[in-house]
Image (cartoon, rainbow, N blue to C red; front, side, top):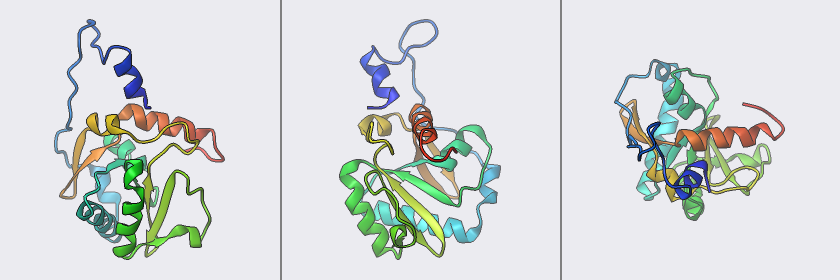
Length: 179
């Protein structure tokens, strides 16, 4: 259960005046200057993954460096993209990416498969995430209900809500590296 869910259980989001807060569900379609920093090769691979997941009927959220850049305007090349999906969709996501020509990164370098599926195509990594790395929570419906939209290079996508993104990053800090 994410931070968003905790606030809902505590009576819902509130404005500074104490009343219910209206939540915006989309960001204005802007041209993100940082989007130009993504090479055409990388973007074509990311787009292939997006389309493969959508064709399989999998709803996804964009997290990681892309979400950070969408919220802050600052890009840090992470050499990957993170897609968050519901746990029930993880196997279908793996299958969709395999059918689209992606390979399991586990064969190159082992990783913890309890929360993430790492795939790659021509050295470009696409991660599918359904839980926190420490197994404290999983992606749930609230993540999708509160996900703002953004548009990048012709693709309309949903972002991991800022509260959940912060929560994910805080948990990663407790591991062997820090983003």
